Image (tube, rainbow, N blue to C red):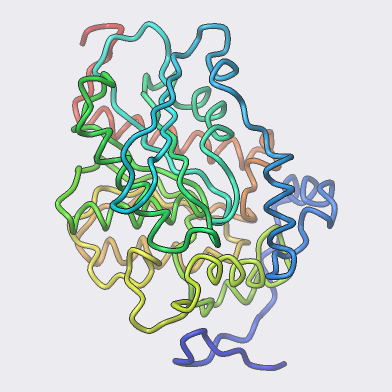
Length: 349
């Protein structure tokens, strides 16, 4: 078997070995998906995949999200980064709650090249905003390759700064903002926590990192071990990192805000929740990130779900493992909010 070099040319990648088996329930859902949606993303099909995503991904309107009055939903166009366009923020919260409410500042997934701020909200509102009495802001950041790094991250930072500065208007608690995201959004959330720390920007109560996309180098054992398996592998990952970074892909001096796994200083960050599947390519980079936070004296809760592939809970929401994962995330959020002294708006406590 041939040996692959890392993008930076700094060493040899591991030789792939037998992969961890998929959880039985998740395996059934993966097989039912078929091979079409699992086709690797390549430079040749990226544009077509983006066009298909824009057509097929559900994009609820503000009226849809209000769900017959259960939620208050407002779209804001706020100042973007210097020399950049305005940023759209979709703000949503359970109706009738008296704030200020804690805020989940959420960055959608889609590998930095797909996805939108609206499609993730129905699930977030149902699973977290209602039971935990949270306000949510979802960010419509620009996508690669039309906008390369640092554009998408700067969009997210500009929106965070605006939200914190307008906390009274939004009826949120600026001291209780949780940054979160899944996949590419999880990577952006980790980068945003680093950027806010280093710019002395708005502080975060925590960072919710769900299967975060952290490392552009493609040199971990799991990134090669899971080649051709699941729904996301090294071919797709390299394609989207190149779309985001352009000529800086794999560069030795790439800043940690572009790829958080490059960070050498993870001190002073908010508590992190890191989850990943044992049977997905992001496993090793995510486990290493949690370990680096601990080594820096920080706080991280790590979950490695056995037999889970990337995006497992979306493809098999009723599987036992998916339910366990959702419950664990909710418990972490609840503990974080309780420990921070969040008052219950309904009880007045």
